[in-house]
Length: 343
Length: 216
Image (cartoon, rainbow over all chains, first blue to last red; front, side, top):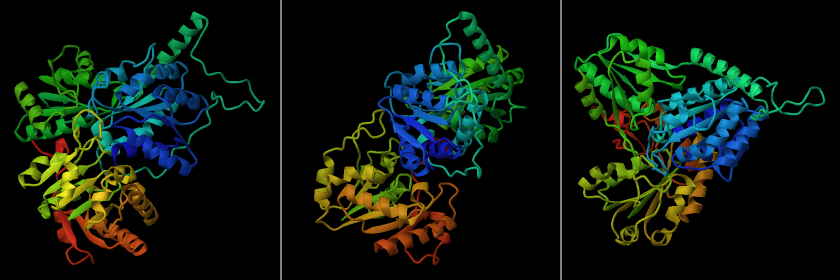
């Protein structure tokens, strides 16, 4: 399947029966697939009049307690930012997909990873966090989509699946889990009282500052629990490595090609591939920084994740960076040259 | 001769079109894909041009803008009387771009191939395949003349995928009475199928390669 289709099909199989979106390259296949499949399974597909409308429809559906998703690409996510903040402020679960293209502004339609800051540091306003999953293969796209819905429901937070345009457009074989997850009734949802309970209220406005602070602190404790329990990453050969490469998404696969050549040529290289960008795998990077001679971060941007890598190392080892931008994809040869420079 | 390649997106149309143009020593290959932003005929431009095949692609293909404007050179190529291979975008939405050229094509000898990959979720049974095939015909205002089995699961493809896919393609052929032209797959897989399928075999060399597959 194509990466974009895999997200859509995985969402449906994870019991997401509500999708609201607006087309934008290079993620439009998600909407197109949903438009075809949702009517067949009794779900709801709606092409909204804008990204702003789509995210607010997500807000409404999430409040009603159903699994809901929207997808877009970089400029469209900027438009959704306000709604994402409201969703976080109302403690609602939902899944937001960003198939990143070049920016800023209209940028371009070719792949990029320049929305790391937007995803991880908060696109919208306020003290909120969003779990960000960054798959690097179409199979992992499927796995992360299931995971995203479960995490969103478990912690009542918005979860973002962050892929670059290449991941959305490329084709790879996938296997879907045989069973769909069971979705429990959400006792906080506004789905009708049937005269049996007090109405639930979905809201992000709190009149008394004390109330708002109490809520923000409680939410922060939930974020702390996520940071403690939900870090996901993959590592390879970092125990004896002199140079450790850090990359996520499809860039990690390009980096791996360079890393394999380095290993073959006797260079002690290792890889850390963050799968959750928030919570960031800072502990493993901190430990690695104690042993490695250097850490090099590779991104399809001018250097965004590298800031979190530097923070995590606490200055224990030098951190280098290699990046391409504007829709240009790093070449394995260039990364190999960078590795050699640090040895 | 004009050979047109249509089908569901992601089925292997572009790989088939590039290989066919090379095998036929075509004069032109026209990239008519207005649907797919990346992984397109233009990726193989060097290879095609080194074999003397002129590549005509949308003016902004592989750039940073999503502007599906088609160059006027397409008109002259279609009137040249030469050997032309057209790689059409996926589904009926891709075939719309072909419709505007149907007047040049419909009265000439042409082959319109519909490729079928059984392992694409929206074309995994005869009903879905035929429904898409008919919408492609409607959008392009041309008739599908041949079916091609391109069943694959990318790097994990085995000969069994092609033989399984052939059952579906034969079934579609029986219902629609459209003949099967060939089964196409990676060279090493096609070799294993010699004498095992009742249709001609067409080996493919793959040209659309991901950055990490190129090697260092």
